[in-house]
Length: 248
Image (cartoon, rainbow, N blue to C red; front, side, top):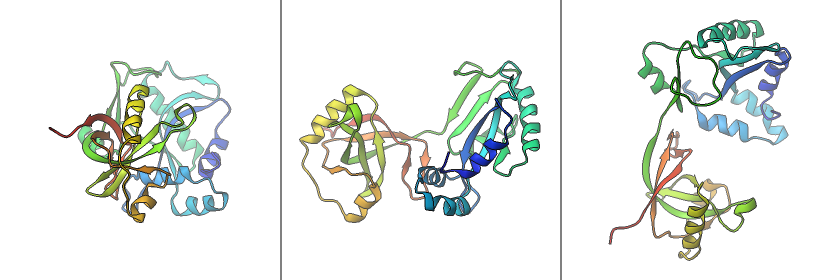
């Protein structure tokens, strides 16, 4: 990853044919995990901005599992065995960016509350699984909110001329773009929005959206599911749950 030199440095220290499960994280000034800062770093592709971003907002690779080490397949070993191998491996690498993420058998609620996205629950005897099974599940933070639709961005590729995302607001404040996944739903929503009246939005609102979009007054609101609130009270990773029409 050219926009994350610290990860390249770590990867160059790995033996050949080694695969580690990691999560990229960044922290705010209070030492709390910040998905905003992490996303900002990973979106930075301008060459001259990357060194400054690395200094001011370093990324870390929190390692939680290991699949292969120097050509040896570890997937059939138990979770506990892989954790022990991973801990020793990270200590041997000795790079501050690569950190061992310990497993937790007690105080689960505390661990769950402290993680922004959620936690993965694994049986201690489980092998490495590439799909969700009964003994390997993810507990995600999920919340929901009804928001206004005040615009739409155009999709790309096969979604050209269709809505790519919905621009959402709460009490006149921008709270994020909600992506669309169902093709049939995307077509219905696009047809509705294309015939919705245009509205004027403040320049400050438009600047926050960043992407080009068409401001409209939609005849419906939407209920979105999201992982967490950002520091600026926006919805992180909102996805459409249902369309809410006004009661008649």
